[in-house]
Length: 425
Image (tube, rainbow, N blue to C red; front, side):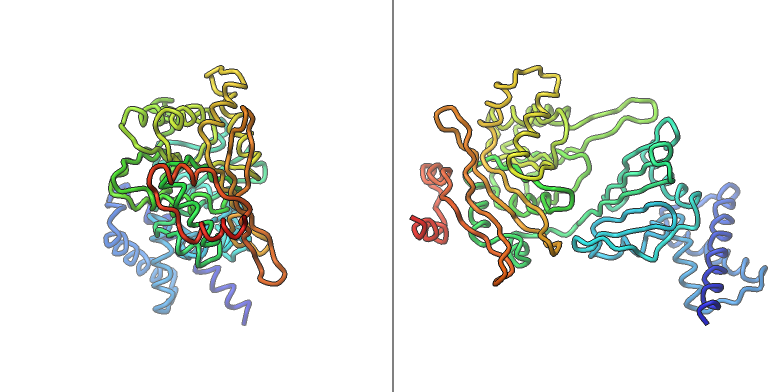
């Protein structure tokens, strides 16, 4: 019985390939709008009837519907990956060749039963999206980034960089906004941590969210940004739009890669320079990963207090070192001590996020950067520690110094924090 099912699946796969090929060929003589799903569906269904009659293939209603969706997906959708893109629990899709497709679901990697027909099928899939951005993949340009229609990020690598064949990584884009209450509900952080971050935002403290890929840096930044006062103007800067700020005065800037002629490039560094001329109260950089960090430090030091950004780092100390290293590698040619002074003056809080052993996202540490007698000191305010009894525990270790700044500016301190600090004294 299983063998019969496999033969039937193989037969339907060949039918899909043949119908797809016939559809593409027909576009030369009879073009159609590939954005019009109804027109595509009509053409596909007509071809299915023709091909079915020619090869005497009898299809059930369910098979006919599945074949229609599969061919339409090849033309204007995500092909074999469509079923994974429709799954809201999947955060990353990782293709390690046509027969090896993995997904990240709630922090755990698992192999899916989705597959491409062959290497050529996988390459056609990649080339379709890469071509929409005016880019191409070949031996002289074997790696490329592209943005999918729903905002998700696609990164593809082909030989010679990937000798085994085409490798594709897709980071899903979440359109739904996750609030701080949602994150509290999932135990990503404690109520006291949340109140501290709210206070820091209202006090215009510059915050860096540090952690690994998929740790929840951007998710937490999104949630915290909700507490920026409505009276302020925000300029966001990203490589690929992931931020979903619920603020009525936001200007979003997105970088642009150079086209096939090597023109039209606008990187994060250029966008930061534009932002400095746009009367922004706060600047939010989706992620710093290059020499744009120097402009970001300048912005934080010249009137854009309360700015936010994320960076890849394993802990708060490494986050600071990475910021300094990236700034030193820029063409600013500033001495190391000057860079260190800029970092100390710019960064107020470092929020370290990551996943625990169960794959759950947690705020692992909140650290305040202080200067005492010209020396840098990192004061840990909160720490996450696994507990055998409760499963997790968030400990308050110190009262933040920026609480004094909040009082000076007439910002009320949350009673929950005041009680917590008094209990520690």
